[in-house]
Image (cartoon, rainbow, N blue to C red; front, side, top):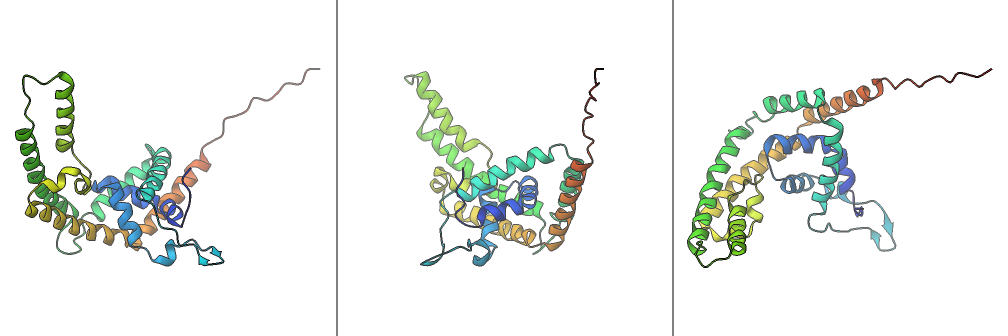
Length: 231
């Protein structure tokens, strides 16, 4: 069980519909999204309002704790909304009405394309460097080849947007490549923060939640067999 050290868990749970729809439609790193969400809140919102003799609790989050909260609530939400027509409609509405906004001159698709255009050369550079330093040689055992290919695969695999900065090989690229990726991410971060602050989206997701609860209530219960009394 995840220990609730502050209001983070409650806030993520209360906003899980918004976080899920943003993450699934933008392909942003879940851990990065949660970090942006929490940074967008005030300290008063995050503090757990419980006093001790030394004042309010001021417990800091351990690394990845907020991400664990999100993963837990994500699984619950996805199970509830799987194949739900309201959720599918809301996702399409979000794509066409929110990801098309141009907060500072570009819609989200343009920003994502720019990010991938900066990420791919960095991955190609590191991949080529790895192959040059670690070629497959005749004297290598099958186990050594498998380990080598596994390491190469970690470079080639597709990441969530922003996750590449957490990879060990990221710093092996030239400085200008790392800078280009970070700058592209700054624009994406700013776009996501603007979406997080969209009050109309909060209202629409609240209506979605109400619709889902009504659907659950309106599902007819299975009829129970009536017992026949023996005379």
